[in-house]
Image 1 (cartoon, rainbow, N blue to C red):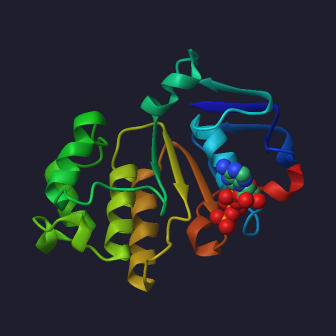
Image 2 (cartoon, rainbow, N blue to C red):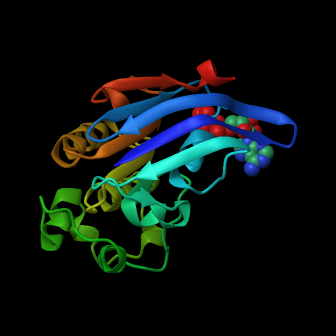
Length: 206
Ligand SMILES: Nc1ncnc2c1ncn2[C@@H]1O[C@H](COP(=O)(O)OP(=O)(O)OP(=O)(O)O)[C@@H](O)[C@H]1O
């Protein structure tokens, strides 16, 4: 999969968040989108996910077989985790996993029945998510995204709410499931993007 931005920019009202972004994101590379708070990382990620449209320029999506992906179909090719993404609080953990994988295929490197063990929350499988701590919810979002069989994996602030063990767990998860994929990570913390081989500073596109 590849995503090409051609002179892309986005503004909210009169304020330009990013302008003149010419950049190629291409599998199997791993990109960190960096910048201070409020600089436009999440806005750029929303553009790449097809959740926001550019105010100028264009974004072109191409599948591994060379076919063009229309922006309204991009969601089928990606999985995404972010602290601000809501889970269904009434579902138990097991129901959350079952529901998610009705829509996305499980990554070939794992069986669906192994996901709870990898998550390390087997004891909580019948607990509704509304009783989960913020770190448990973040782990759940990360495992759903990484263990989906999608060519594009997008993570916004992946280690927020994770403790030291959680950060090590995240790093192992990425090592196991990022091979051959296009991975995008928006981050302010180096331990979240050490595995990335390209760094993009959003402040270069003001
Ligand atoms: N829907 C919106 N309407 C107006 N302004 C917005 C909107 N969404 C984001 N912004 C503005 O765009 C700018 C960039 O925000 P963004 O969330 O992309 O930054 P960020 O780099 O991800 O920040 P953080 O590191 O704090 O998460 C901010 O000034 C923000 O107020």
